[in-house]
Image 1 (cartoon, rainbow, N blue to C red):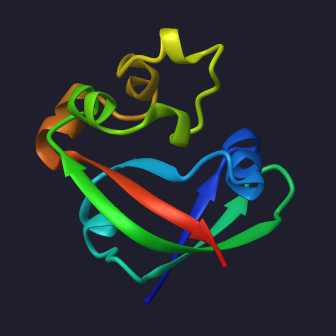
Image 2 (cartoon, helix red, strand yellow; image 1 turned 135 degrees about the vertical axis):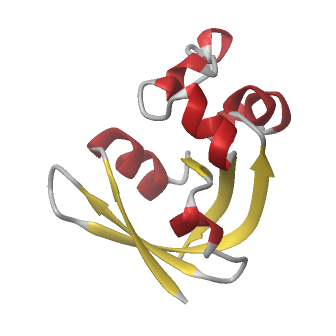
Length: 113
């Protein structure tokens, strides 16, 4: 199955370069349909470029705090310089506590095709 998602320019470039292997998302109804082996077509909001990726793994957590404790943050798009400052609050700009509590969150382990 193929899914489509839009990304800001910086995370798109990190996936394209191979530095970002986990895509972090709310585990809402759309993401619950994604399974291992599925393809995700990412579109860069800034340029319209696309990347085709394959889902190698999927890990579901109750909230971003649990996700940040469990996943290798370097593979989530952080650099060694920003890693000490990585916090679940980073994702609260996009997903509220209420949404996290309702749906949980997911780390999609991806690779470029």
